[in-house]
Length: 434
Image (cartoon, rainbow, N blue to C red):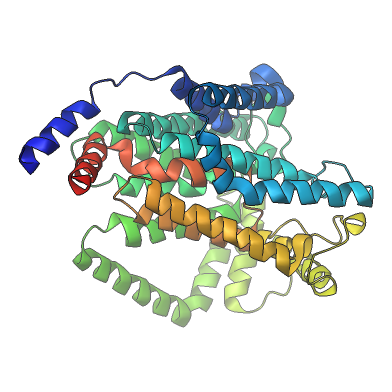
């Protein structure tokens, strides 16, 4: 049999059974729940989490009955997370600090468990058809869009600080989980921007992109807006430009804009302050614009929320320096020893140098598994997502359940939004194996 005939036969066999299995549907529901905040309005927050975790254990039971070898692969991927859960629980127990509040060590157990769920989804989906991978990505985006639309309505007409203050989570409005998962939206848009054969998909993605920008502005998240712009620019350079000539001109433009900024940053700062004084935005964003403008002009001492964030980082670093090997004693774990506003500094204070090294092993393994096992020829999307994850970790907590689900389980398959891309990948894999 010739290579061409082999590829043709393999391609036809790929699409013989496009129907989803019960386990596939469970996975899609888990992903939909993860990103759909308005479900809280129907089931309240506790009910949604009960359904979410309940479905995950149903999924594990399904795998136990149908593919017990799955658990060996899952254990290889997540044993470090399981180790952290055990160690944190023991340290919290002996320290008498077993609460699950934002400034309590047991809170991290929930985040680690959500990472395990995200890894479980990835391990399952990577061996499924391109049809399943496409549906997973679409499910995540549709669910996100529902959350964006509902939250935008709420902050526009009811309470413009609801997202920032997380005052209406039980009513279905998103919070920081929603805001910071939106940072990955430009990846989906630019990864599929050159696909002229699927105009409806592109319009759908552009709508999500613009709706996300609107929500970020209405919800008064200046830091998130800046990261969103950075995400868009970075994705354009690494993903949107599909040939070396475009990448060269994009890189050159970036350098020229940087030089322009350094030369005229005082003028830019004055323009930003003038914009704030026109009262175009809410007072929250106007105040932040003034602070940024003063920073560019070199005349601002009070950096408002940035100043508060830097203060939290400073005493988090002090905690690490006092406990450099294993981290803070969990009896002393509180809002004044762990700032909770910059993930990488907080991790040093929580787990010490030894813990962070072990945690970095997990992140490196997860990254390279995504690159190696995603069965997706578009690797740059994954690289951009991880760069964003690292950058966010210096400015905010970045292990929120939506962020890790997006990073670990959805981004690796974002190239499969285009049907032709997914099939081409599988044809080439079959050819290579032949």
